[in-house]
Every structure is written in C-alpha cells, then in structure tokens.
Amino acid sequence: MALTSQCGLHRAPYQSAKASSQAVHHSHNDLPFHHPSSPIQHLPRPSNLPTTTMLGPKGDLAAAELAFFAPAFLIGIYIVFRHGFTRQMGWVYIVILAILRIVGAAATLDMEITSTASTALLETAAITSAVGTAPLLLALMGFLERINTGMEHKGTPCLAFRLLHLVSLAALVLAIIGGIDRMDSSASEVSTGKTLSETASMLFLGVYLALAGITLFDVANVRWILANEKLLMRACVLAIPFLAVRIAYSIASAFANAGSVFYFGSVNVYVQAFMQFLPEAIVVILFIVAGLMTPKMEKHQLYQGSRDVEGQKVEMISGPTQGSGYAAPLYQREARPQTPRSIGDYMPSRLIYNAVRGQR
Image 1 (cartoon, one colour):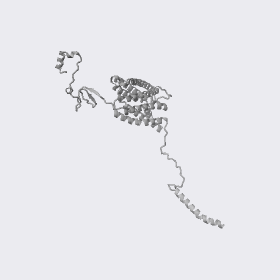
Image 2: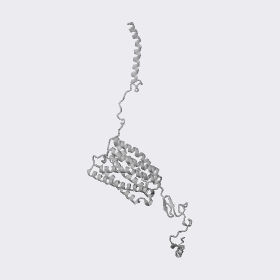
Image 3: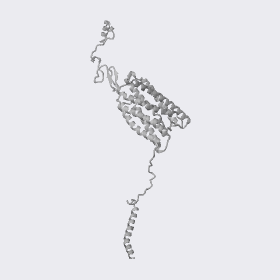
Image 4: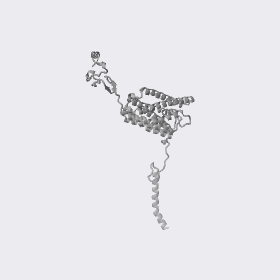
C-alpha cells in the first residue's frame, strides 16, 4: 500500500502534465491552422473548380491540325512577302489553306470541349473540310505556271492555266454551296447539295489530271526549265501522288451515302487523318521548303528604248542606260556597218535610196 501510494504520488504530476498537454493540443486544433503533428485531412473539392476534359479522337485530330497549320500559316506569310502576292506565286493558296484548317480545327475543338454541337460550328467544320482541295490545286497550278513561263516557247501556254483557274474557281463555288446544302435539314436540299458536291469533285479530278499531265510534260522537257526553278519543279513532282490521295478522298466523300466511313459530316476520324490531313501536311511541307529555298523570281523584259515605269528591272537593247533610266539615243551607239541581206543591196539605185533616207 505504501508502495502504491508512493507510485501514485509520483504518477500524479505526470498525469497532470499529460492533461495539460492534451488541453493545449485541443486548443491548437480549434485554431484555423492545424498543428504540424496533426494528421492530414482530405477536404472536399469545391464544386466551382474547372474539371479536366478528355478529348475524343476527333478532338485529338483537330489539335494536331491546329499544331501543324498554325506555324505553317506564319511561315507561309513570310514566303508570300518574300516572293509576292501574284497568282504565279502559289504560296498565297497555302496561307488560305492554313486559315481554313485553323478555323475548322478551332470549331471542332470548341464542340469537343464544351460538348455542344451547334449548327454554326458543324457547318463551319464541314465546309472548311470540304474546300481544302481547291487551295492545293491552285497552289500547284501557280507553281507550274511560273515554271512554264520561264520555259518560253517550250512551255505550256498561259491560256491553258487561265482556263484551269476558272474551272477550279467554279468547282470551289460548287463545293461551298454543296457543303452548305448537305448540312440542311431538308431532304431535297441535302440531295441538291450531294449533287453539287459530286460535280465539284469531278471538276477537281479533271483539273488534277490536267496539272499532272503538264507536270509530266515539264519533266520530259526539264532541260528547258530555268536552274532556279528546278527545286520547285521537284516539289511539284513529289506532290502529285499525295494530291491523288486527297482527290480520292474528296470523291469518296462526295459520293458516299449515310452509314459510310466517308459520309459527309460524319467521316471516320482515322480515314480523315490518313486521307485528308496527312496528304495535305506533306504537300504543304514540300511547297514551304521549296518556297524557302527557291530564289525570288526577277522579271526581265525587253523594250526598244523604253523606260520601266513600274519599277521592274528592264534590260535595254537600244543603248546604254543613262542615269535618268532612259536608254541612250541611237546616235550615241558605236557605229557598226549593216550586213547586206542580199546582192540587191549593192545596186546603185538601192545605195542612193538608202543614202537619201540616212541609212548606212
């Protein structure tokens, strides 16, 4: 008993100290900040914080298009300012294609993130996808026209390119109208849009075959192509098979019925990736590399003693160029005897006649 009481006497200060520490511990728990020794508590997540949205396959494809065509647009702008804005410089159409793809990808991403498919966004995504064939063909046409211009009389006439340009623009208009009608709720409008899309795809096929024929003709006459244009010619040749895949996709999408993997507005994402996005990306890369490595085309024209009033580089053939930009007069040139063209030039009557007129 004595021992117990003695232990109890010794235990009392310990219990009082423990009680005081527990009181301090509880008082710290009542504060807004927990004691470091307290266990971590998992608080409920506030409902107003944004949640992470997982993109589907179409969203992933749209993100890939945006990641590719955004820098392609910037590089294309640089090339356009470097080479010029004329039709023969087909990089203008590469910039237009990049704009169409950026707009279409942005519309698709908006529908994927918000999980809402409005009519305007659906039409925007579908139409920008349908008209992608025209800029590629117009770009190829511009490059071939530039190459054939340098070939002079050995190249394809400019009239042929003008006709192909008009056909391409007509096909583009039909493709846009057809895409709008195919997104309509009316069955008759959908049927009309399908017919217009089929017509546009056939016109695109005709333009493609004509451009492929011109490309093969230029390859056969490659010795007449200017040295500065041969790299651009290689890019056109390499682009032909990839454009064939893109044209095949356009035709299949135009003629497909509901339920097909090519059906307009609900194309299979993997078909779209390998038959639309991939060929377009390869062709754009080929044309961009050619644009960066091809020197700027200088316009050399021949005039008989005239002045270039548009600031172009003109090669005068009637005399040395003066500081004013005009050719020197004929009397300042070095006198060179004229070679007789026939024996009749030595006849006395012809000599007298030429002397009266002041000819040598």
